[in-house]
Length: 115
Image 1 (cartoon, one colour):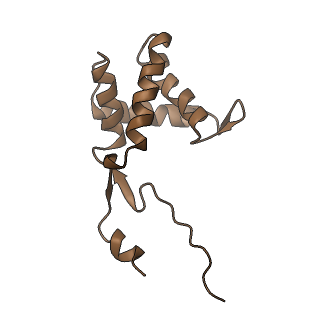
Image 2 (cartoon, one colour; image 1 turned 60 degrees about the horizontal axis):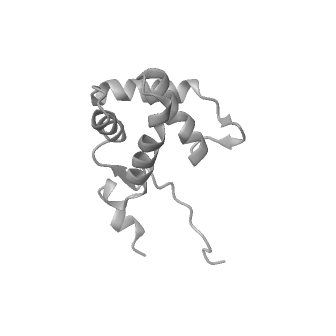
């Protein structure tokens, strides 16, 4: 029987964000006038991830709708950003993580994938 499909975890297995996802969120915060560094953002993001349930209003973890709640938790609940400013932050963050230029291959990725 020949191989018909191969499923690979993409994020933090084959590629990683550069700069880190924590710094990318911190950059977005700083661009919006919120003074936070990468380490502070890491703590906030970890806290939000631990606090939010796997499912929010029918949206499972890591779906766009779940990330909207995640971003709201970080930027509004923790950092005090006005709710009406959230759409701009969400749009920028979704665009950042949709841009291939945000990601770098881990060493050996190309060799792994060449058949």
